Amino acid sequence: LLGRSCSISIEIHDFSGPRRDTIRLGTSPNCIHWLRTSVTATPQPLFYVPDD
Image (cartoon, rainbow, N blue to C red):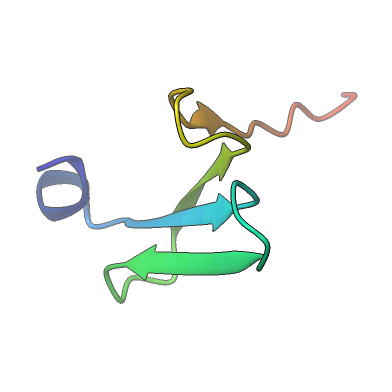
């Protein structure tokens, strides 16, 4: 829903298994990144905050 209404893609970096996978939902160049480190834990958003 967020991706469709805001024209963004969602990319999940999955480190919960033996393989490191990247799952991309959407085709927009603007992207929100999420990190998944555990099968039982909720994925966490990754943010970049500029210094200026």
